[in-house]
Image (tube, rainbow over all chains, first blue to last red; front, side):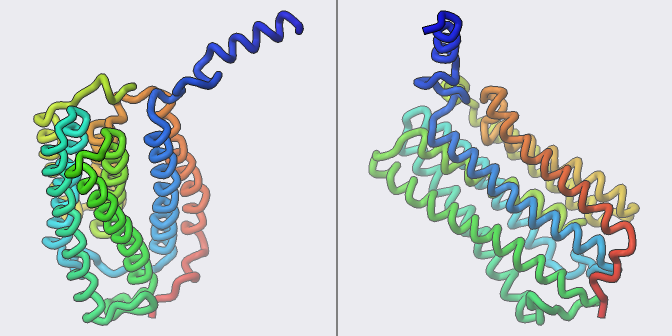
Length: 209
Length: 102
């Protein structure tokens, strides 16, 4: 074998990318969670960009702060941010090999998720009762795209919250049984924080702007 | 691994939570502020990005990860901004006929 080729092979094998190492300094499962988060972030980016585009080409748009119950929306934001903070503490407790504390924090996180989902169900119910549909709404100026964007964006996000609560429930049960790893709790936490990040965008650009 | 060597205290998480609530209050105030829409949009983008960076850095521990993981996380967002930049000028011209107000 050519000596320069052998040297190059040796260099690659010794590098981070030569196999047997973790180039990103993290576990496989955590890295896959990051890849999922990036792809899901692009999905939401698509939704929000489409919303921004529709809004820009619309001659008028209903005033959201007068239509939505902003006290409720702010409370939902508070619930999600608080649950995110508690989730970060759950990850800390899991990393410190304290399953009891991790379980308690996970339960608090799940409660925060349920509060958010309950508020969203209440908001949707009232919105639909007032005549909002994905193809029409009673508010002036009557732009159908307003409610279409509302149902798609908040619905997709709500589905993510529901999925997150389900995932956290599984992780919490495993933590209670002592069958958990710090990686599992951290991956569930990454997903939950991502759901929080998406809501930060929705809160600012859909409800306030 | 990065997360094994950087334990963040509960106090830090509590402080982060507090500042996130402050930024949320600020964003809410901006939503009702009687200021031009463009300035409101700019300020809301700033507060939103501040919140996202705080969540990603502290809650998601991104500040303690390797630089290549941080870069791979933010690169698609730059692409999303480029995508938005390409589509948004469409709305500035004659496209206002696309959506009719009844």
